[in-house]
Image 1 (cartoon, rainbow, N blue to C red):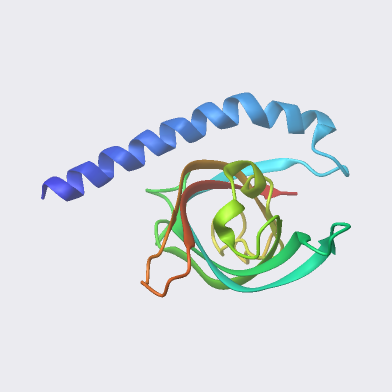
Image 2 (cartoon, rainbow, N blue to C red):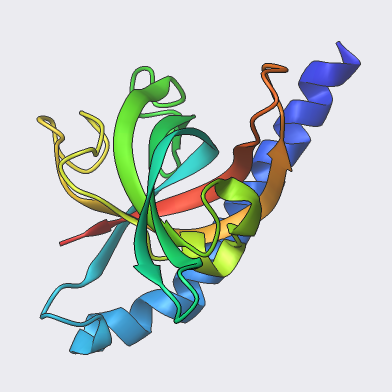
Length: 172
């Protein structure tokens, strides 16, 4: 019972944080400064993002042949809520995306050099859920904010995974 109450308090806290972020950042993009004529739009998707490394390839080397840039392929899993329609939308807190392929450019062949700054701005094309922004879903979303960030070995396989509380917005 106490854990459910704590989860509800955390969710309300995150939603208040979302409102604060939207109030300060959406206006910048509404003026067309989002780049490429695209703008950010809500409702925000708030939840947990997990990244599992799939593979990495060296893309650039220094004068001594040491790799300085890796293209790291990851599998992204998201579980969360469409933040503006908890009451109005059926299953608004049952948004799930599994195995979405993403590519990151890092200075290591694994996730050990991944940071919040690298993650923020990550675009997931055609991955928006149904019934949040539109009935059909499939819009492009962008990782607007990383609230918490933790690299950990979730499944005890010796490989680090990322677990982060995040906010996605629509890139329209």
